[in-house]
Image (cartoon, rainbow over all chains, first blue to last red; front, top):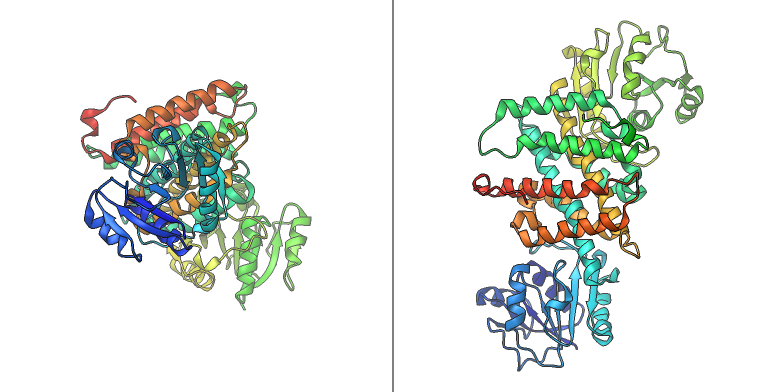
Length: 279
Length: 279
């Protein structure tokens, strides 16, 4: 049974320890700066030692997964003491492989956002691997293949591209959901946000079924300027009637609306550049 | 058995006729400007007459659903001849009730995007109703309640707010997916877009589980300026290396990134206004 230690006891560590343990690996130690968190998580497994020390020179673990926040990662990696035979893999999407000062450095990045104790289907989660040498890569590939059907090998540069794409499609989309929710709250009797759930679900489904370029709908896609003008006027009203400072960004909802409408028109109209006018 | 006629044979009509017929209503006629489309759709039902004439003075239908494109709606409504006893309901999210020149005017708007012959669970789709008088409303409520569990009554103004919110959360999000896909294609060996599917699904799920304000993650949410700067630099590289004119909008990916990062920081930092700096 291969032995694995975990540095970190947050959401990523919570999910990875559970799925890895379930697939026949032994979790030797779990580290957290706050020993309570380490004790909590270690209690889920047999023979796992909780610790708040980064000195693992006596550890039996062959792989150390470092699953701590991005801003703590570099500090933790520099304090970490592991046996030389051990592999050290961080789980970050944004940090490079080079940040790990060990000969058997690696990255083991599950492309998912985790909430503690919310069950996820790991088999569907892409695992992005990178390693300093091929033996280390092979070892991590074996672990990854036991928990997921979607294992990829990406360089640090490719992972950066992936992270950038995720910021656009997840972080920024979520902020659009927040704006939508506030727009619905502008009604004298707030319209519940969850009214949009079936439509948003179908939008996402379609984007993957037929690709997002083909799935685009809406006034800007149709070049329907009368609706665009009407919606811009509506945005003015919403902002005008309800402004409070510091506000929730109402003043830029219009800017976002204009930028997207312009860009969508640009994207779908070949002759857009000739006909370009500020809307 | 209540009798219903359909003006239009597109996606919305396709789905509404099927679900309404399945729930015990009789489809008397289906109109399309192109008779072939009317014949096609009518062939799915017993005793449904296809037509390309808008003169329904002899029709037995009690309700006329007008499910045509927004830009054709006004023209069709003005040519439409129906018995005075009949209710006329359009299915548009953007057009007002007032556009219908009939005493029993109504709106029956299913808040969903439909693809022909892709099965949808109608029970979960919000149906937004509006009517000129209470009898008409009651009649449509009965129809709506037989096909969906989520029936709402909204004024034309409220429906406009809803449509605006849908543009932000669906149309604009989909465009962010398109940008993400193109970012991944910038890699020498294109990274497949569907790698983002589990993450996007989870993002949407979380937005409805804990509300989008609470679900927000990412560098801007954490105020992580070093990652923001690094991603802006990466966007410069992508644009610089691959520009072709007319391009796909690469030149504004950075503008979108900056606008969202600023806005997300603004939204989550109370002291943002004091500390405001162009990033």
